[in-house]
Image (cartoon, rainbow, N blue to C red):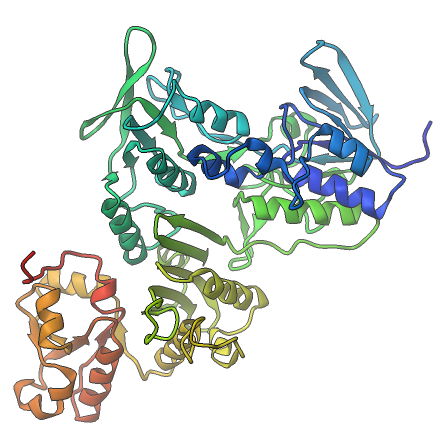
Length: 569
């Protein structure tokens, strides 16, 4: 019997290979076997939409190291000293004897693998909705390279064919651009009222909607698919919803994933409240000899401290490292996740972390929100592009509960600052003192995220009372009597405006000389394009003794409702 530490890893995509490679580096004499039911392993699953679009020419690029070496079974054996058994499915695990029993697909042979430590990295499974027609030819899911190959080679060229994407989450949105690059006509059907509806609040999602529509995507929100239709040869032809029918040569179902817990349940491991495998900070399961990581486990929210399910390739890789360290005797802990995500919609970027305002409200926090639209670099440079930052802040602790950033400019680096602040447990106002890198090609002199922290500080100190666009719209719909004070220029007003009888135009430069036109017995809500001038107007009016003034956060840019223009096309 070998005295070497035997490690069996079940699952060969992200967490599993990362754990195996790290163990081999820390404990070179360990005997490591990876069991993978598919053919391919250690590939970048998040790159599949780029393979479909053709930006990534070969699927081997998704399996390659940065130097171009393909991580196949030969690579793991020759370079890493790790055995890989692909085309092999684990049937059961004897926890008492510490033996993994599996079957090899090609031979039908049953094989056994003894272990000292077992790693479950079995990932997630796409959700298959219970609707008629999901098994028709041309109906696809996207999770593996094999799935992407099938879509890319679907009955010849995709140019000018009709695609229906069911689900406007991250996968659905990312594949939308891939299909568009292939020249397809695309319809997105989403049962919620917004795209990325579980990830974004309406005033941010609104801009994502605009980008999709601008790129000629037929966006159908608030619709539920009732049936997928096919012809007498079993090929998909259309998708029927509760509101219409849409022609389809190809359908992608992207309504989310669920953790793959079959093996864990059969082994009697503890399953968490989210329905995923429960692990501790060391990534150990309820069996101290068995670890689990990646999409099959639940994480702890860094915001709430409660379990959450947040499958992400980057998280799976971190899990793998923590698992390896602990198997090798180190005390490495995984503290949790913030729920960070980022995606690209054509020329528009969206990032988020933490909780949405909807979730914060449901959890009963006393909170404030901030909307800050501003250019991502010095405004005098032609490369400057608008980004919108939304912060949700705990009023009692001053800590960040959630952030969303969207726009054509650089949202990633601002989101990384927000994530670092949230993860550290610091106050949001601490961001105002961060010594961030500045030069005009990279940011304004006071970076957008520092300005956002200033606004938070003003609001917490009572200097900047405000309404969100949604709160203003609610007041409108209730028929409240107030003055909606537009302090932009007449030219800006003519270009685009909010059409409501309560709107009164007084440019900021004329406000002090026009105070006689504003009664003090009415509420006044100033706003402008991005509400920098709206805030200035609020300070002027309060200084002049107006008792009831609140500016509208985010201005016209963040108004997610109908706007009108007098400009002639």
